[in-house]
Length: 209
Ligand code: URA
Image 1 (cartoon, helix red, strand yellow):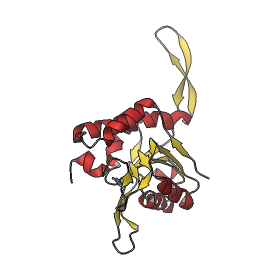
Image 2 (cartoon, helix red, strand yellow):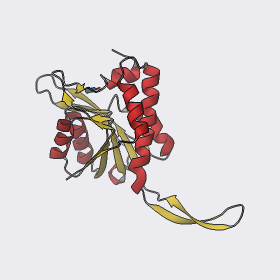
Image 3 (cartoon, protein in one colour):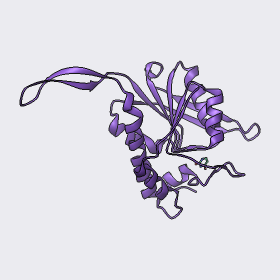
Image 4 (cartoon, protein in one colour):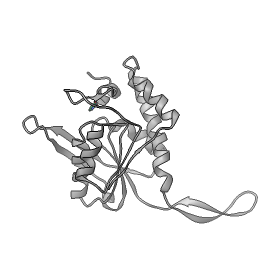
């Protein structure tokens, strides 16, 4: 069964607390999301394999660890996931980026993928799905399904905030996928917003309402 990893590092928690405040500006919100995405990436990439490489330093010979050439692919779920991409690319500059767009069918209330563009090497890559808010788990789970239908196997989910029901839904449909979050919040209100959450992440990143 997949696991949920909560990053309780004080820096991440402090920055998330500022993001939750409704008085926080779009600019600051965006910057904090980027900073948290970087800090979470630092933790998630802890198990990346390295190879010993021979080099010459100005002083002498050394055998040093370098990251194995292993393809990594970031897949933001539009649109809020876009707010995490640039920051993660600073740490993983060779990562490729795919995109998945999803809308909610007003009759079935189910997420329907309307757009998917992935790099050719996605099926052989370590994939990181980026979605700040995992509320019901519906769009995250549907995004994983889209990726699996295209041959992707090694998939991790990066959320800022999840709910217990959102994480459970993802694991019911995809028990092989681990979820990395900064906070597990209480649950959902009647409009499917996360409580206490931070509001609509897309609106707060892009300054829309
Ligand atoms: N999406 C958001 O952006 N916020 C929520 O609280 C739930 C879903």
